[in-house]
Image 1 (cartoon, rainbow, N blue to C red):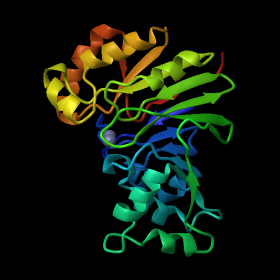
Image 2: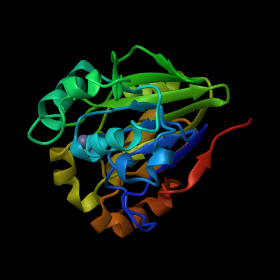
Image 3: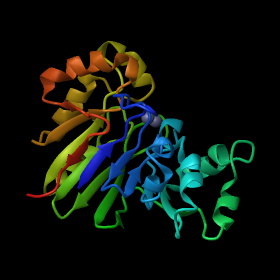
Image 4: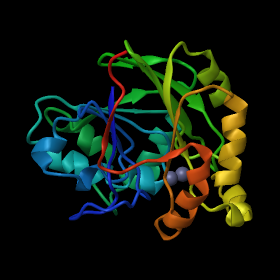
Length: 254
Ligand SMILES: [Zn+2]
Ligand SMILES: [Zn+2]
């Protein structure tokens, strides 16, 4: 499995990761925070499935532009996987006629610009050769962590979360855990703000690591740009790698 966390900066290659999109094997996206601004539309059109973790704008904000960019290049709808709650939020707040074409219009084109695929938390589904297990995490709204498994092993991605439990139980149960991507938005001195907004700091990150108590490769992501250096310095002594946006991490092969 190859995973790239796209940089949030358009036009130059920065370290910013406040907008979230992961590319998996170049053709599957997790979240669409920056997907519609990435690369050329022709390359965007290779993405055939998008898995949405929750409806916050830094995770879905460029979905309208992405669909608009790619539909003339594609011969089949993009499959957008989301829970019923996230689908309702897209309908109510994102694809609203005052801000963009409504979903009913996008679904009525030939071929449709997208196909909405329902995610039931806890029920695994397949995208290509990857088994996806969606697990509820603890954020300010409903949000999914994802366990992605192929023939080589499992990579777990928390999405946005504060201190959580179920996600670690599911990570503990997998056979070969290759890596965990866990968010770390704020420095430890901003503990109250992190707890209020259901995010993590390095101190809280360490407590989550202890819950799993399993050797794996740990990545921190979603660091707020203004505190990136401070958070990275705190993480440096914890055996945690800060994700390098734009770098392709290859977990293939045993
Ligand atoms: Zn969020
Ligand atoms: Zn976020």
